[in-house]
Length: 257
Image 1: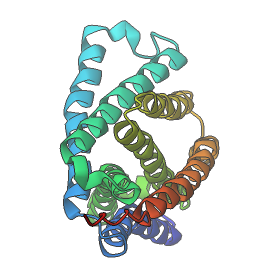
Image 2: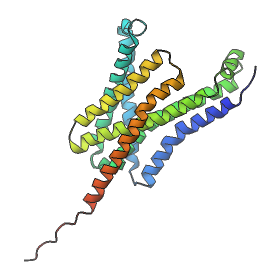
Image 3: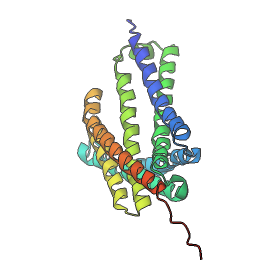
Image 4: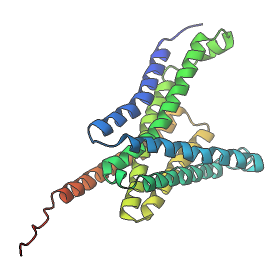
């Protein structure tokens, strides 16, 4: 059994990205932008709360309506359903999180910090699962499990790391939409967050259900990643300039009688 140790290196890099990226973003938010740690923790709670609703809902539908699940139903129908459920559950949880935080998430940086917590905890969980899988395979006494591990393409773990970078970025832009909905009281932004989330998860789900290769899926999802980067940059420039202008407003001195 030939052992390609690039596979282990690939796994380690993926785990470092999956865990290190959200931790780094959280530290930057707290140290550089003076965001309250409670904002990030609230983001963690919104993710957990969304999954408490999301996972049983998906499992319940699969049990009650087995004909709705592939291969009984078209892949695109089920993928669209997955996207809608993810969008509604997670963006509504974010909306509630901002409502709870109120003034603590008034600035754009603090708004993004909730996204760091929400998308970050998911990434850390994924990293933990990958680490567990790596250790269990390396320490296993099962010949079958060990042979399956070393037969795994060495570069595939890197696809998982890249997927987490794109996922966290998408969480940030969707959080920015919901933050804008709350601060501007224009809830079309919330609808846009749900739509973006639905489209992203539906496309990724359809590609996965269709048996597309991992790197091909990441290439397609990369379109959303590029769009998210552009949107985030525009948001950052616009909102930070608005906050700076508001801070520089000089109030008139009181007139002496």
